[in-house]
Image 1 (tube, rainbow, N blue to C red):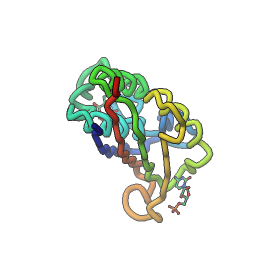
Image 2 (cartoon, rainbow, N blue to C red; image 1 turned 90 degrees about the vertical axis):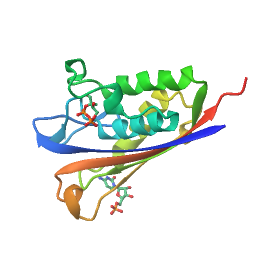
Image 3 (tube, helix red, strand yellow; image 1 turned 135 degrees about the vertical axis):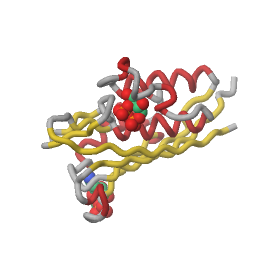
Length: 161
Ligand SMILES: Nc1ccn([C@@H]2O[C@H](COP(=O)(O)O)[C@@H](O)[C@H]2O)c(=O)n1
Ligand SMILES: C[C@@]1(CO)OP(=O)(O)OP(=O)(O)OC[C@H]1O
């Protein structure tokens, strides 16, 4: 038995904020704005995992009106969600994600993101976790550098005992 989910998220780029993507703090002149640390990639992954379980979305579990999640570490939110996966007897099949950003250049940071995501999702092998990046060729809000988007698709596999 497998279950598949997809997630998509967008955060605005703003001055005076750290640029945290996939759990990695990337040196950049601006960062992502949100109620939490605004880790757009971990949010897309969280939504993909919740979608696979039929459990709604990240805002349902961690409302952006709740002060408890102000500046929350999105890795901790994902780890909590992964607990729900394990409770239901699933493990990671594979996950594939794309960061949509004109800048900064993500490629140097992707191996570290993969390690962090693989840790949170308890992957048996790093090949189960793929992260890609693309520009939008200077088109649209991502192309103008107004924000960064991310999308993710996950496959969960029922653990056979
Ligand atoms: N923010 C980004 C965007 C892209 N990359 C890498 O560059 C490659 C080419 O991007 P195009 O949008 O021109 O197709 C892409 O495949 C990524 O490897 C990146 O590192 N950071
Ligand atoms: C993560 C949460 C909660 O702190 O806040 P944001 O960082 O604003 O992120 P978003 O992807 O808009 O929605 C989920 C929120 O509930």
